[in-house]
Amino acid sequence: MKTSAQLRERRKSRQRFKISASVKGKNRMVIHRTNNHMYAQILDESGTKTIVHVSTLSKDVREAVKNGGNKEAAKYVGKVIAEKAKAKNIADVVFDRSGFLYHGRVKVLADSARENGLKF
Image (cartoon, rainbow, N blue to C red):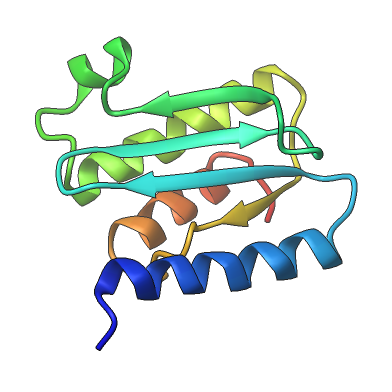
């Protein structure tokens, strides 16, 4: 019997292979979630340099949201990362959900980023 962490790692590697094989030359927006926090960052096309980073631990986000592990916080993180990306002239990204299922907080963050100008 595999643990949920092992299953997520399996989904993550499968998704990363598809992203790297199909999309060349685009920046990648990687998200990570824990029970208490949401993280989002935009990496360059090589995946070695972080261009934009936002999390619920960031000072400006901490002041705006009370709890970092709910949908409200995910929506705010999506909004802030889209605004910071637009400030750096980034409009198109590839969404990398890091093996997390696309529902709940992950979906809210993605929808919020789309509403605020990111295309993926």
